[in-house]
Image (cartoon, rainbow, N blue to C red):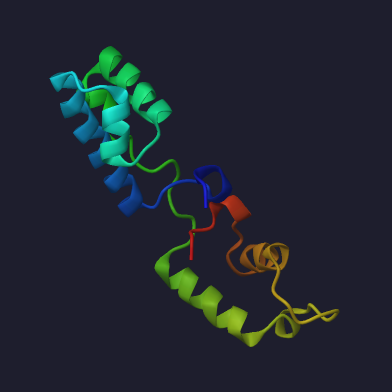
Length: 126
Protein backbone atom coordinates (compact mmCIF):
# COMPACT_ATOMS: atom_id res chain seq x y z
CA UNK A 1 0.00 0.00 0.00
CA UNK A 2 1.27 3.48 -0.77
CA UNK A 3 2.07 6.22 1.74
CA UNK A 4 -0.90 8.39 0.77
CA UNK A 5 -3.37 5.56 1.29
CA UNK A 6 -2.53 4.87 4.92
CA UNK A 7 -1.35 8.11 6.40
CA UNK A 8 2.37 7.58 6.70
CA UNK A 9 5.13 5.27 7.77
CA UNK A 10 5.27 3.39 11.03
CA UNK A 11 8.23 4.30 13.28
CA UNK A 12 10.10 1.19 12.05
CA UNK A 13 9.44 2.12 8.43
CA UNK A 14 10.55 5.70 9.11
CA UNK A 15 13.83 4.43 10.54
CA UNK A 16 14.45 2.17 7.53
CA UNK A 17 13.68 5.03 5.16
CA UNK A 18 16.04 7.36 7.01
CA UNK A 19 18.81 4.76 6.74
CA UNK A 20 18.24 4.63 2.98
CA UNK A 21 18.49 8.43 2.72
CA UNK A 22 21.70 8.46 4.77
CA UNK A 23 23.18 5.70 2.61
CA UNK A 24 22.28 7.77 -0.44
CA UNK A 25 24.06 10.79 1.11
CA UNK A 26 27.27 8.78 1.30
CA UNK A 27 26.88 7.86 -2.33
CA UNK A 28 26.20 11.49 -3.25
CA UNK A 29 29.50 12.44 -1.59
CA UNK A 30 31.29 9.79 -3.67
CA UNK A 31 29.68 11.21 -6.81
CA UNK A 32 27.64 8.14 -7.73
CA UNK A 33 25.05 8.56 -10.46
CA UNK A 34 21.33 8.59 -9.59
CA UNK A 35 20.69 5.47 -11.70
CA UNK A 36 23.31 3.49 -9.78
CA UNK A 37 22.08 4.71 -6.39
CA UNK A 38 18.45 3.97 -7.26
CA UNK A 39 19.28 0.43 -8.35
CA UNK A 40 21.43 -0.20 -5.28
CA UNK A 41 18.86 1.09 -2.80
CA UNK A 42 15.84 -0.24 -4.73
CA UNK A 43 14.12 3.14 -4.99
CA UNK A 44 13.16 5.22 -8.00
CA UNK A 45 15.55 7.59 -9.73
CA UNK A 46 13.07 10.39 -9.04
CA UNK A 47 13.36 9.69 -5.30
CA UNK A 48 17.15 9.78 -5.52
CA UNK A 49 17.06 13.07 -7.41
CA UNK A 50 14.71 14.55 -4.77
CA UNK A 51 17.00 13.35 -1.95
CA UNK A 52 20.04 14.78 -3.74
CA UNK A 53 18.36 18.19 -3.99
CA UNK A 54 17.53 18.13 -0.28
CA UNK A 55 21.11 17.01 0.50
CA UNK A 56 22.64 19.80 -1.60
CA UNK A 57 20.51 22.41 0.16
CA UNK A 58 20.84 21.14 3.74
CA UNK A 59 23.46 18.43 3.94
CA UNK A 60 23.03 15.12 5.74
CA UNK A 61 20.98 16.75 8.50
CA UNK A 62 18.27 17.60 5.97
CA UNK A 63 17.89 13.89 5.13
CA UNK A 64 17.27 12.84 8.73
CA UNK A 65 13.76 11.91 9.79
CA UNK A 66 11.64 14.70 11.17
CA UNK A 67 9.74 12.20 13.35
CA UNK A 68 6.18 11.02 13.03
CA UNK A 69 3.72 13.24 11.19
CA UNK A 70 1.24 12.79 14.00
CA UNK A 71 1.14 10.99 17.28
CA UNK A 72 -1.01 7.97 17.95
CA UNK A 73 -4.45 9.01 19.16
CA UNK A 74 -5.36 5.81 20.98
CA UNK A 75 -3.26 4.33 23.76
CA UNK A 76 -2.36 0.65 23.89
CA UNK A 77 -5.06 0.19 26.52
CA UNK A 78 -7.64 1.88 24.28
CA UNK A 79 -6.65 -0.29 21.30
CA UNK A 80 -7.08 -3.38 23.50
CA UNK A 81 -10.53 -2.20 24.58
CA UNK A 82 -11.50 -1.40 20.99
CA UNK A 83 -10.46 -4.89 19.90
CA UNK A 84 -12.58 -6.44 22.66
CA UNK A 85 -15.58 -4.30 21.70
CA UNK A 86 -15.20 -5.19 18.03
CA UNK A 87 -15.26 -8.88 18.97
CA UNK A 88 -18.66 -8.32 20.60
CA UNK A 89 -19.98 -7.49 17.15
CA UNK A 90 -21.93 -4.64 15.56
CA UNK A 91 -25.26 -5.68 17.09
CA UNK A 92 -23.94 -5.12 20.62
CA UNK A 93 -23.28 -1.50 19.61
CA UNK A 94 -26.64 -0.78 18.01
CA UNK A 95 -25.91 -1.59 14.37
CA UNK A 96 -28.89 -3.78 13.53
CA UNK A 97 -29.16 -3.70 9.72
CA UNK A 98 -26.23 -6.09 9.09
CA UNK A 99 -23.44 -7.65 11.09
CA UNK A 100 -20.36 -6.34 9.32
CA UNK A 101 -17.82 -3.88 10.69
CA UNK A 102 -17.19 -1.08 8.23
CA UNK A 103 -14.62 1.71 8.57
CA UNK A 104 -17.45 4.16 9.25
CA UNK A 105 -18.90 2.02 12.01
CA UNK A 106 -15.50 1.54 13.62
CA UNK A 107 -14.91 5.29 13.47
CA UNK A 108 -18.29 5.83 15.15
CA UNK A 109 -17.46 3.26 17.83
CA UNK A 110 -14.12 4.96 18.55
CA UNK A 111 -15.98 8.25 18.97
CA UNK A 112 -18.52 6.70 21.32
CA UNK A 113 -15.98 4.84 23.45
CA UNK A 114 -13.13 7.33 23.66
CA UNK A 115 -14.56 10.66 22.46
CA UNK A 116 -11.81 10.87 19.84
CA UNK A 117 -12.00 11.30 16.09
CA UNK A 118 -10.21 8.92 13.77
CA UNK A 119 -9.98 8.78 9.98
CA UNK A 120 -9.33 5.70 7.92
CA UNK A 121 -6.03 7.27 6.81
CA UNK A 122 -5.03 7.62 10.47
CA UNK A 123 -5.36 3.91 11.22
CA UNK A 124 -2.16 1.90 11.56
CA UNK A 125 -1.56 -0.78 8.98
CA UNK A 126 -2.55 -4.27 10.03
